[in-house]
Image (cartoon, rainbow, N blue to C red; front, side, top):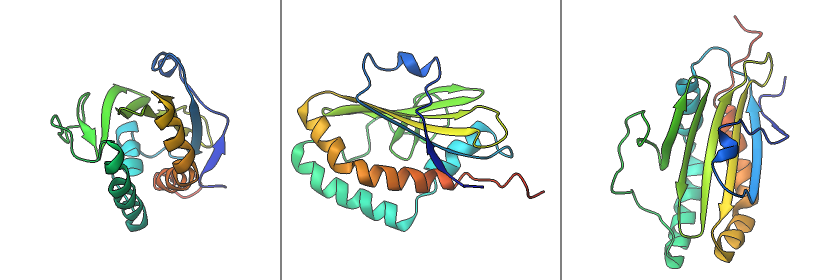
Length: 166
């Protein structure tokens, strides 16, 4: 069984209402029937490998010259509730089978949606939706897209639980 696979973009009904237009989207999935949606979200976003932290440091050192956000927002808190944060991702919505995280910046807005579809295999879907606010957002996304795919795939793999193991 593949731990993580990229698949057709999965957008729940609630997620279709997030942006008037979506300029970029992808979905990576894994299997996990052991943990709650909150635990899965924490496995994906709260456990950052050293090489991913390094990439974010490089990203932040470069984008600060273009006026993009790199610091901790003034409302930062680590409470797992709407308005709280997991790393630099703000929690926008919590439902029994779906959590919506994201950030807004001058160049683009993005949401990461963690969904549990309850199917037998690859039930956990992590979907990224991006809305460009200007040309800078499109350029930025085209530059980071290869890294985005690599990082998200690795992060999603952290939530994998082999259903064949008891």
